[in-house]
Length: 151
Image 1 (tube, rainbow, N blue to C red):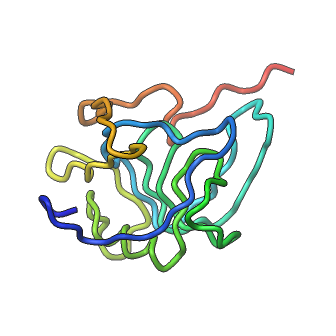
Image 2: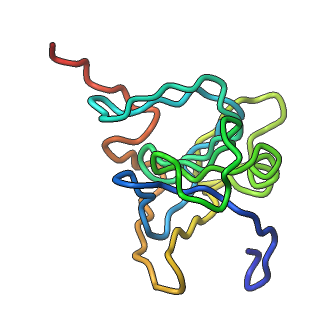
């Protein structure tokens, strides 16, 4: 949306089963042109996908990103992220802030370029404002070192 006008509309795949997509108002805090994605430690359904394009983290390990491994958009089937077709993910990535400079792979939001707002909702229900102050990293957000497993 730009103000009250739709900028782009597409089908997505959100979280399924016990891995729902969190509801709320967030801000994109980090963008990566390409990145590996993996499940959290001790996940019941572990995964690792290399080379995921157009990744935009908005809350902890949840992101908008391209999904080249399925074409079931319009159905819930992710581990909580918002999956878009590669073409749609590239377009959304280009429309959002922070703006990643040409030749760079990634960028975090900062005071000069805060991230675009992301509203995740179900129907017309209002959602809580879950935005963090710029520069604040919440436990479990991507980019943090994860504790080593205790085996």
